[in-house]
Length: 312
Length: 304
Image (tube, rainbow over all chains, first blue to last red; front, side, top):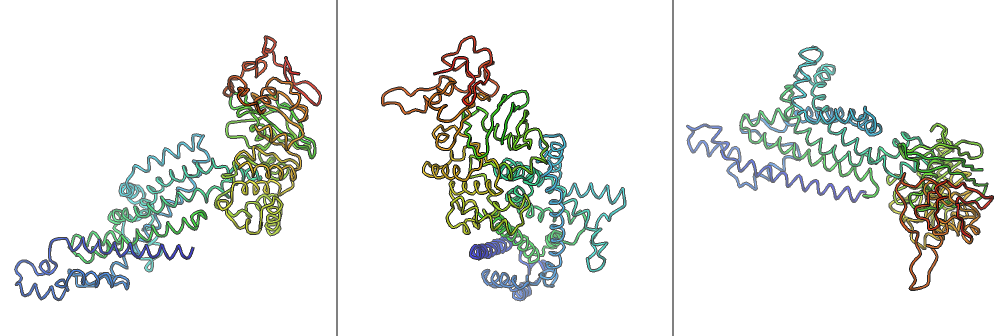
């Protein structure tokens, strides 16, 4: 297990490094010189050259890359060419907000999918089980931002029960923080929950046909007891795979949902960076998103090993 | 001790097992034989209350006065694994792959009220009793680390854990290598309390059981002491089955029973075997009753 973990960590580190090269290369390939952009069309060549030296963009690409990538580990994402302020702290603040948003959305999805999917599997022969299947099918067809807009219409505009957008930091007012997050969480979680319900249902259905569930019943467990004790952990193996993929999707979905609910998260920062042509900021945010996806895959792989002794 | 009386098994309108009756005394080992589709497994599953969804049993079966058929699941649960146990055909998939073997053996004891620590300890003892080498180590293993024969021994340890009154084995050695098969059969014969042994293998029945019940088309066609049934079969189906399993001299055609087993619900009225029986006459359109004391058979034109 320890050896496996070390191996996986090495692979994770290598993938992040490779991703770093890719992200840096893409940004470097974009046309446009930050110094020229900053000084405008009327600048003298001398002034542009001086600013390049100040930014460090006159050095070889490899040196610039090592400088940037080396700083990442310590949270140094460089200093913005546009705002002249360090990029790292901005990303740090926003990352926390997005993480809360995504993890909350995932929690909502799980709270919906696990009980509903299991119920639909156990009752797959009667109308209620079929109805859950059909409803989750319909839920899959709804994009997260549309769900968000509908939720705002119902709960914020009509019922006036929850704020339609905005974000209050947890430290300022925990109650308002929570109220502000309910709708974003729901709009991310409902759709993902619908998708996940189908996976949970089919995983549980598969497990219900396994011989070891019959063995458990032959020992004297009831049908539900056998499913609970022997089925759910077995069913969770395929569900974890989907969960990992969904977390990555949620991260991307969050970019849109942050726009809908005016939440200052990473997605919001990314869009601002693009609008302001703030290259280093965009580069930093993209790097963080890529690293997060790689980290999620790492966690999924390790979880497999914890769940299934056959892989050890 | 076990008494089965007029057991029927239905899947919707189709009657899969019809009017099956037999008994097993304390310590007695009875074989239930028949081809695939003869209803032998369904008969066993209905005694455990483990019939698949949509399949129901009716009639009467009691184990020392406890009803096994037509009682609520709540009451059956208390008997399963304690008074009646079952070993299934497929050892490779019958154990939970994510749970240590020792815990799976202990589970059947804690379920019926034994304290956890004691159950753990006894699990190791049981694994030794089914002659698994180094039982402490096996208890900590996961099923995929064991061979098919070893897993079947684990299943047997689970079945024996609460010292049930009746052990049901459904083709327990069919999936095993021939060499392992023999050891497993000897072990079952040695440790079983009363035994209901289901198989299609006549040689296996002969080596393990004292009495045999022959099923065809969901009914009992013949039953009796094994030596008598095998040396002097009366029902024409039993006769054909024995002829087909006998070694024949080189160059002669293997004797077979003509035709094949009809699909469920496709058996003829009257004698279920008459469409394949070389001796069938008009009389066979009437259903023959299972008659005879000790050695009983249901045939209008018995052999011998």
